[in-house]
Amino acid sequence: MKKFENLFDAYEPKYGLLFCLALAAFIKILLLCLFQKPINADGTLYISIAKHFADGRFSDGMALYPMPFYPALIALVHFIIPNWDLAARLLSIFFMTFAIVPLYFLTRDLFNRHAAFWSAFAFAVSPVFNEWSVDVIRGTGFVFCVLWAVWLGQKALKLEKPAFFVWTGAISVISFLFRVEGIFLIVFFPLFCIVRMLQKPKTAVSMAKGLMLWLAFIAVLGGAGLTAAHLNQMPVNRLDSVTSKADAALQLEFMDKYMERYKALEKLEGTPPFYHGRQNLLETTRHFMYLVYLTGFGKIFIKVIFPCFFVALFFSSWRPMQVQHAFILGLIGFYLLLVYLNLINRDFMQHRFVFAPACLVYPWVGQGLNNLFNRVKNSFRPNFWLFCFLAVFLVVPASKAFHSVVKRDDSVIIEAGRFAKQNELLRDARVLTNDSQLPYYGGLTVDQFETIPNKYEDDYAGMGKIAIKKQIDIIYIKVSDEKDIMPQFSGYRLIKKFPSDDRIIYIFGSAQFCKDKGLLQ
Image 1 (cartoon, one colour):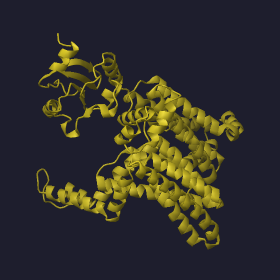
Image 2: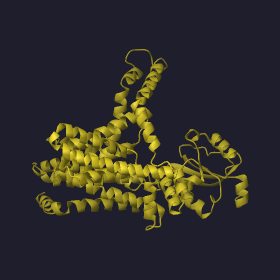
Image 3: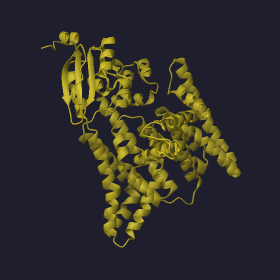
Image 4: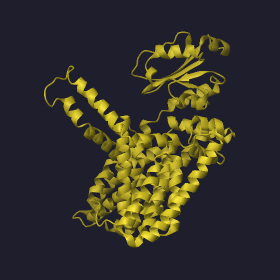
């Protein structure tokens, strides 16, 4: 233990950040190299848009999805790295690796250099962040910008220098270009500044100057963006969605949805196997729906942080609380509250919705790990407890990261796509699929095929009717291997079947298509 402690004290001050960056890059690149996994479904959309941008077809790309910033970055990286999948994934790896830099600076300013090291270390080995770093998602760039914006924002609050206000505004806007949740930071920062000015009148003048610069910068940048979008008649960054959601929130629409479900549960109470007895399961659930939602919400939040690192929060230091701590904790609370209300409104939530607030908790994770490490150094059996410490906070999360990627290693999708591409099956064909990954690896962009609506996921007769109605040439579907019966489509022949451990991919062709391609025996 003494040797480890001496090495740590000697090298951590100079090389702690570099070590964490190297560790993060090593894990992510190893995950990328070892496991052949298809691009996630959202990634096929972003790469399809990027391909349109690279070919100069901007209106076609914008028609697919009105958030062009991330696909444009993929297109730029593609000029250097000609493989689309690799270019997009390396962009994600870059964001998730170098997000460690603002996180390190943020934790150092909030606590100390040692806490900053452990915060960066935990972020580098965190399973969810490593898993998402090899996906093609907007969340990686979003978190990268949010961490920089929050670090600059807390510097602005502490030093009250105009430059920090301007940079906070600039990077907040860039975060909004990745995900619309960036609006949370844009709204919260000026509100917090106003509260700060009311609490501390002595700083009101300097704070007001900085805030006015921030507002002017946001107004100019936002106005320029809206003008450009209006002139080109393009919806940009789902601004209509943001305004409609804000309007719905002000009208308490989530409460209407809550009461809908409340009344639906009330009606079910009299149906078997439930009875009218007091405090039955449905009655209890109905009265405490907000806690049920909160439980599921908390479960997702803890999963994203990772349970081992969530436990470290109980060993963190929460006092004394300075303005920077209050700003970040207030932002986390504001963000989580809005996401929770959105959960109640939509009755649905994905892990990526809490990606940013989970990252902002990591300074306190780092301080908790630092406190634990100090206890280990001063314990009765330091070598044993150091082994346990490294096992829990290094081996377990790193192993989980590798397990998560292995579990999702679905190379049969790539194999099927390679077959379709080599045989030019999808070229000039009308394709119907239940998974955008399949035709993507066959060489198509997402606007070159039809996707089956979710309600027909297991309704093969319904799929067949859609195929006949739309005069589909190829039905290209993914089916769980738990379904032992092979799908049958009237007027379509099986071209190829690709089985794997947990799913089967089928390629069916219409009789006329098979005849034209010479596929009939």
